[in-house]
Image 1 (cartoon, rainbow, N blue to C red):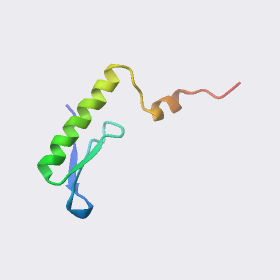
Image 2: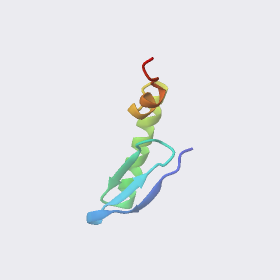
Image 3: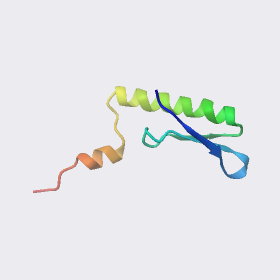
Image 4: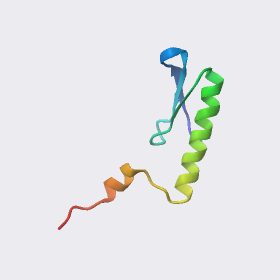
Length: 67
């Protein structure tokens, strides 16, 4: 299970972040919309991991210096 942090953002939007999933952040005009959006974002993140797609940050960490 992933947990999200939800808080009021700028311009009367709500922001939702999942700190355990790199890059999973979303927003919505209402708190409920932000929750729906972050769930969809997390589902996409998990699906990408299942298919072996990695963030460029992960790829950068794996690179070795040229010898």
